Length: 403
Image (cartoon, rainbow, N blue to C red; front, side, top):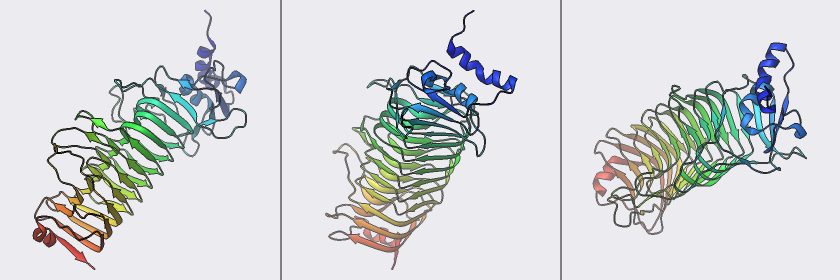
């Protein structure tokens, strides 16, 4: 029986383990690679990434040529191997001649009527990995999809265009919850996002998302609920810093048009937004339901309701609300506002809030329950007048301005 080079490559990790042979510290990948990855002239293929990670071992790196054409995916790249604590395996795009960092182009099969393939799918045990410098085009539910429980993942310096989601956290093949523990996503930017930049679920925890941005594509009707950054289930201890989510909209959706910049849910805990910007959403800029959510230095503009606080306890510091925008076109039965409070026992503290609006047509606060209370220290309103709405007397009783 004749074995292909790719079959031999897949067998190398086992052979190395049995013989005690030293692991390679660097492996090379090109779009047309069909070798063992020992050099650029004998490069491996990206579809073999799982076996390449196992072969290079903890502390090694896989260089993916970014100057030799695109990597056209026919199926997801499934990864089940990893590194070790403090010895991650690094997978990064580079220029094959100079070695300089360069985004390798990963192209999927997404079309107008199909979600499309996910790209890098991380299965259970694909721990301690560091990905950087990839450019994703026409990718489905996850340029990175966490399909099983994974620890210690870093994703940095990527771009994306025409994707369903950039980062997805949903189990595959009933493999139990896909808990992601210890992660960082940094400096990832893109556009034409149908559903969300990211979704983090299950009991995933201890993560940071920094200096990322995404621009959504307006969804028509009520089948798709766009959200820039979405937290779900019992995910906890996650911080967003200097992230910008723009134009996540659900258009022509009847009586209520959804679409949020950032959202977290009731069972999330330890959620912090620092110096983030949400703009152009058809519902909340920040739609926060988690207990004790903290927003520091955040800006919301051009959303229907710039800040939506559903939780019983929340803290806002030095935040800015600008120009809420109602896009319902007469179909939607909802009003815009700068700050909306939606918990019957809400105790929300705001330390420094600036409201900017040239017309003052939008109410400052909308509070759904009579027992909710808000304390505002240092309120600045840059508008022709302070618009407290039709229920001004009731709202002023619930919002205490501490100067």
